[in-house]
Amino acid sequence: MINPITVIENLLRPKAKKGYVGLFLDEHQMVDAAREVRESGVSNFEAISPFPVHGIDEAMDIPRSFIPWVTFVMGLTGCALGVLFTWWASAVDWPIIVGGKPMFSLAAFIPVIFELTILFAALSSVGAMFYINGLPKIDPVIIDPDLTCHKFAIFVPECSSGFNKESLDKIFNNHGAIETRPAEF
Amino acid sequence: MLKRRPLVTGDKTYKDVTDDICELIERPPGIHFMGLFLGVKALFVFYLVVLAFIVSTGMGLMGVNHPVGWGTDIITFVFWIGIGHAGTLISAVLFLFRQKWRTSIARTAEAMTVFAVMTAGLFPILHTGRPWLAYWLLPYPNQRGPLWVNFRSPLIWDVFAVSTYATVSIVFWYVGLIPDFATVRDRAKNPIRKKIYGILSLGWRGTARDWNHYEMVYMLLAGLSTPLVLSVHSIVSFDFAVAQLPGWHTTIFPPYFVAGAIFSGFAMVITLMVLVRHFYPPFKNYVTLDHMEVMNKIIMVTGLLVGYAYGSEFFIAWYSGAPYEQYAFINRAFGPYAWSYWIMISCNVISPQVFWFKKFRRSIPVMFVASIFVNIGMWFERYVITITTHRDFLPANWGDFVMTFFDLGALFGSFGMFFLLFLLYLRLVPAVSIAEVKPVLFVGKDKGGHH
Image (cartoon, rainbow over all chains, first blue to last red):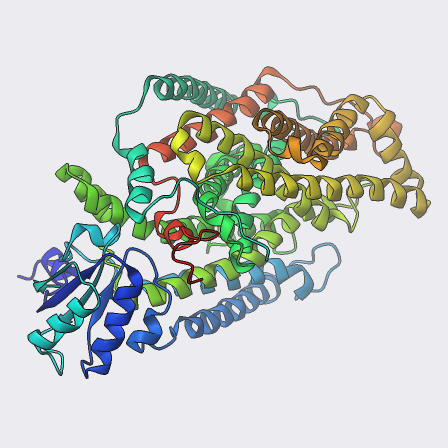
């Protein structure tokens, strides 16, 4: 017998990877260190910060988010559904003449269609962000509680190509890390 | 070279920001807060009793009758919906315009939006007279045909507009809260507290990839909320403008209502911010006098827009040559409800004129009083619009609208609901967006002059 709660829990509980972490107090040091880590040939690593840091995307070569496409497509879907539904309900399924207007009086339906467009676009964008960021997570491993306050970190998992503890330690310390240690994330 | 004024004063570090903002929800509430809270709660309980009487007895308890079919419920609905709009304006429109000063007030303004829309949403449902059948407003498959809702009716547009607005505002607010809940979680010493805020934070960790998608979604929501907020109050104005009644059937209504909504909403933000700054002084470093001054400028501009709309309505009534339209406006300004018209004019058009002077724009007592006046005036604006249908085409149809105890009870009680939600928010949720303030911490300062 499979317990559905266990299945969901296992799905939402992130699996921690072993790796090496450098902690910083200044976001610019972290960005510079991240750039050097990437240039040293490490392919897959994380930068953790309490707020979105300017320039980290370029330093880590993170591509522009794809979510606008979700917004666009789902907005069009909401719009199309709005047109179809108002037409079907008012002109096909139960046609009643109201105020002498045509059965398919598009101008009067625009507010409803517009609101459905916005609703679909907004909710699916947030849904896409949740999906791609793996939210919600149950009990995620946290390297340092101050990473949501005033510290910044770079975490390189052992499984990433080009992982070398000594060279990472050197890069982190060269850029003013306050702490370097093995960690799980 | 022009120098920017700092957005956050007091030489704060990142840690100070977290401490200052989280402290309000971590320490036990003070005596002033508890007193205020209990008072507001009593008002809320009174509201519930009033609502219970109205729902169980019927709409006959309120002043609506022939010829005024829309009374306090619709007036107060439009009032609260309008209040909500400033929150979206600050959080979404100013975000798109890259107005960095918005960061410290966006969270509270957005909370105000959510609570105002919640307060507003009850009124049309109450006004239906049979609130337990409110689900009839939704298009759902039913056994009456199925008989679908009338999509040509502005009232159905309203259902879609307000419910979409409420949903998207709550989602926008919550998305902004996720990183801050994570901050509260990571600071928590009490395990139960850690658990609750851990659940609310959805396990947020803040990796660069997370932030990349997060920022994109935040911008998209701002982009979607902007047309949404304009559409919502336009549609609310359609409730009146689509009806073919003198005084209502005018094309100026959508922009006039939107300007009025921003006007009243900013006044409410000023009222709330003055109170928050007074009861929690550390917030003065985040919501500075510069912030208040900028908002007062917006109040003055939108006040002028609203004043222009009042004038334009009169001009068009005269210029149209339609006798009923002309009479509606003469009756508005000089008829039995002239007192409400002149309250509206003096509160909305005259009182914000004090903000021409920098001294008054930066004076907390002046702005507090002016913001209260604006809120009173904006309630009366909707009163004037709704009630002046009391004299229509045939003198045999003329009548008066008299408020009863239950009208006033529902009106004042709704403030109990709004402020109860707002006080709970202040105690449970970081009242300034921590993750948004940190990046603008050094704006206008020499150190970290990398921007």
